[in-house]
Amino acid sequence: MGWSFPWLSSFDNDFNYDFHVTLDAAKGSVEHNYASSAELSKAGKIQRPKGEMPGTSVFLRDGDNIYYTYSLYQRGLDLFLNTYTCLDLTPLGRQEEGQQIQAWIRHHDRYSV
Image 1: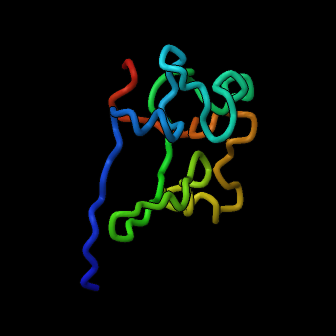
Image 2: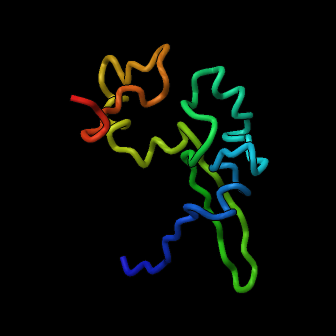
């Protein structure tokens, strides 16, 4: 379509702390998706109280002005994960009731044999 725009990552810098996608109590970052890490842990919505969490932020640049327009966290990111879209169409869905979100995911390199 002739579109040209940069894709950027905020991994491993202060931006993630400012927009609440890195949890680290030592740096004062204890909130994700508008809830404290303690609340999220107690509710079973996160497995670890420290580290990178899922999130996407959208900005618009108009000349020298930069506007923060939108953020997505947790379930809001499902649109980008085609597996979720497919599972949501099935009769039993993701079958996550009573489980940690994404508990069904299996990584080929994270198991002892």
